[in-house]
Length: 421
Image (cartoon, rainbow, N blue to C red; front, top):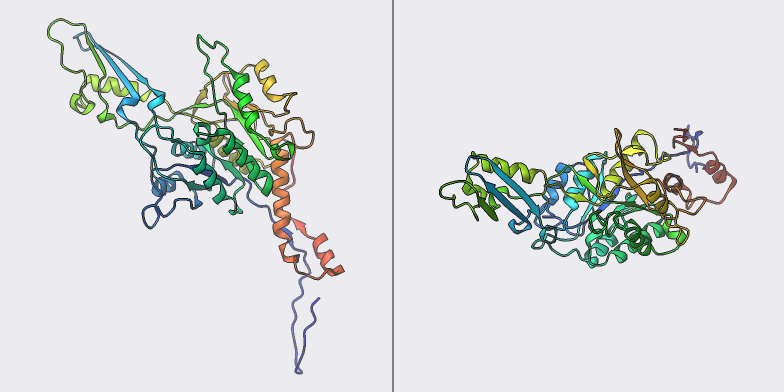
């Protein structure tokens, strides 16, 4: 107890605290998203470039950072057949090589749709002409600006998947999380090979090996990250300027003179026509495919809020998802869960009849470690360690006395006690 220095006679009142200090729970699901945006404006154009900016809704993202990049006409081929009796056959075939690679705006929508709350956005620049280049130098520079934002607990870079140096970006995400020990990195696959006639079983093993090769740094690092496979077909349509699209191939099979519709734009065909509506319906069936990290970050936030950070973020549904792009069997998942060569586990996202799309794994990349193999354990200890650290700051320059030690040891926790689920 501090002793008052009394210099004059009188009555003095000294308030003495009899209750111990408390340990308050820190936030556990505040992700930092890093990537390219349409704009980065607050007070003037470009003033948010490289600046970690906290938002709480999709409307805030749109206000400050804009919309997804508009797709160009050459990124899709529209083929129309016409029998002359008003019956149209329409196919719309996208060209992935000419589509925009910038997916952050879609990813943010996916994050909020899956239960996400407040998050930080780091814009690393504006869109180049589609498809554009996702530069490692930009993404890693954006990552360096997040380093000093203490509130961040998750690192998410959806565009790392299509960057010019996937391994470097992934490695630096994991390194930052492991160095600071107050955040967790969510890793997307680099390649997802679809099942087709050439690859009837896909190439799951080689796809996930790319993740394992990129996740360098040893077990002290990989316990601070988790990887998910495969990509997700979402409920979102691509940002086409529909009236600017044109018919690439027009085939007339009816009698009489063929209408001159090949090369016509949708605006020239007319909003009220049956052909216009048919083409718009087909374009609307095309869906954006996203890496899973943004949806997983939203899932983490949802589970943390509803149950607690100690609950494994698995056997939980993903929203605004049509399904994973590659179906995974039990046998295939066994090789993802346990890898005797590297010990790096990959979490599968699978579809079950009547249950939808579920996250069916809850392991860190350090999957062979008996202490840190589970995401819920690693993130729970992140929360406890950070909560205790922040709640003990008052004692840093206190004298090393019995009184100080008693106050520290009697500190009460406001962190909820984990319960069985």
